[in-house]
Length: 357
Image 1 (cartoon, one colour):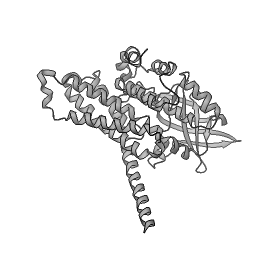
Image 2 (cartoon, rainbow, N blue to C red):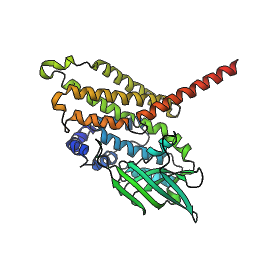
Image 3 (tube, rainbow, N blue to C red):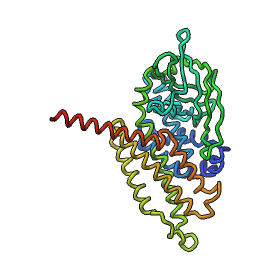
Image 4 (cartoon, helix red, strand yellow):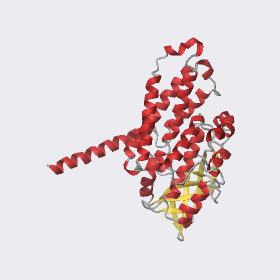
């Protein structure tokens, strides 16, 4: 079955329910993995799958990102039972995974304090704390997390099975949109994490290593949704005898910016050098995020009264676009990162110039 047929048959009929939070597309997500749409060592293919799904439903594209972000943790783990055994179970669609790193990614940039703490008791590793929102999660799913020592600066990265003793899941489905993303608050009360689930005791370095791919996998979510909203604008361009031509939106500019961002992004991916392209990835996600907000607003106005309904695709995509703006790293966070990269590169240039004198 083609991807488009699968989307039309198994995802599109549930779009309103996903938006309202009464349907989580678990079966659709697992089918994509079971049927081999995602490839272990084919990043471009995986990005294109996320992009195509996000044209129909950004929420589901986001859940696929959660799954592949967790896969990235396993891929970069040193232990064979994680980077091979559990990884293959995930890629085969047998298990589902979530990220759990929104808080640490912000903490590393001094935006938040760490929500999880750990201590050792008789040589065993215990974790306490609360993650306010983890998506693509359920009692039979896995998620990654980072905790800070109660007594020193040690940061540990580990994975958790969400049904372990001491874990409480509290569903969060009262958001503006994206409610079908299986998002839960996770409370950890003296949860024992065995050594087999610990990825590293140097979580800051590990997070730095995976961060470029973490962000790369997010960009096609925006690209797919932008394309869908642009298509909606074109679909209703002749409504009411062409009245939309009087709107003060430059659709040709939107199209041009979309094509440039997409071209730049896939050209970057083709270089196979994400670690040295993080500054450019920040720029591309930031530009895609702002373009998504602009295009979604234009699509709402372009749709007229028919768009002013909770069940209208324009309204759904508007809400999803606001969510993308808040997806870690958020647009605000991206702006801070971009400024830091500019300052860092300026310092390098200044140091180099001084050394040449």
